[in-house]
Image (tube, rainbow, N blue to C red; front, side, top):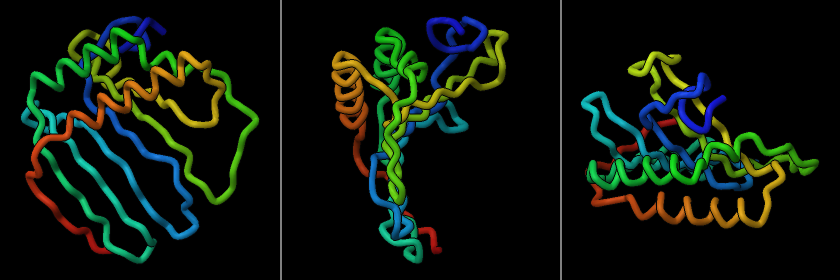
Length: 157
């Protein structure tokens, strides 16, 4: 795989960047935040939250300027964030717990690659102190993208 983007070595365009925090999920909760490109090509910031398995899922959509989305995409490519997906797995494992996780998806179809390349960066891997610092910085930049609330919906269980 290349430095970033297409597994064939080319750089695609960011399609989505999703973060799920670590949490106990014995109660069936669901939590994640996602920067995603809509069908019209614009980005939005979406959060999904549910505390209990039998509760409705709350979905909130926030505005996001195209300029800030492009800056974030350039940043994660510059620091080669997806290279963290190659870290060795740790021996850590916790039952009844959802580990934190990032899922980064690139659309590589416009550059002759596969339609989409996706990368997972998750908690139970071996990260150096520099990796941990990078993860913290990416997380801070990611949450700083969230703009004004556009909509809030509830999806029944």
